[in-house]
Image (cartoon, rainbow, N blue to C red; front, side, top):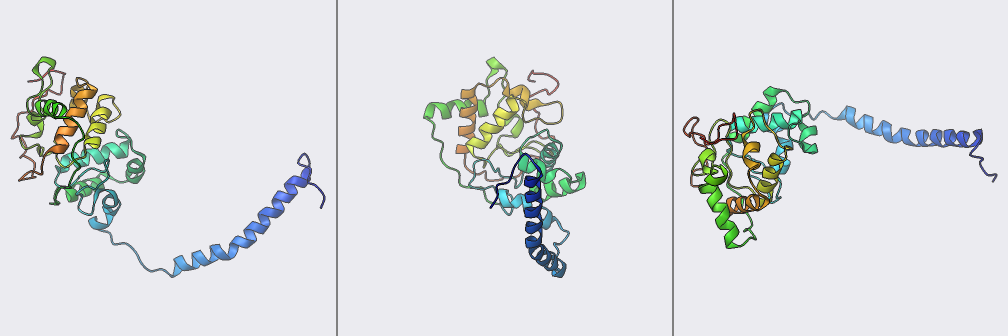
Length: 251
């Protein structure tokens, strides 16, 4: 067999010949697939249950969360909060490629429908692993969650998320039933501006006051708490929020 000279037309001719052979070989396979597709009459129903199927693959059938550290619980969170997060993923304010791609072309009406679906779900809370931090770290987390730190102008978590930490309608999320790694990741993302929300961005102002040790402590303490007796968020307007979102001051 003569050698192909890559500097001349022989090499290109060989490539063309190979391409023709591949095309001929693939024709029966492609034709078979097209025939199978044309014979199929199965279509997905146009319903909310169908639209949330992509969500439930990671977040659980009813949004109860999963054993994965980074797939949070959605069930029972305020619909306004869930809707705002879906919009943030779709529009690129929150960056996580699977979510960004999944939501890229969905209209607001679909996102609101999905948010309403998960907000109404009453699913059991997941069993979370016990934190692997010491008692001093948990004590620091408890102090920040329940009392805050007046010297650093850090309000307590309960001042905005409620005494039971189940959030407040329409857009203040609950903080229970979440893995410590997820909470830590979201606090860090908020602090560094990779997780943002519609302005004013209260959480970024707050998290900029937190140290790495604070974030570890708060995340561990929140994940150590049991499921609430009543997981429903507080009614809208029932809490006087601690943080004035127009500035970095507290009320």
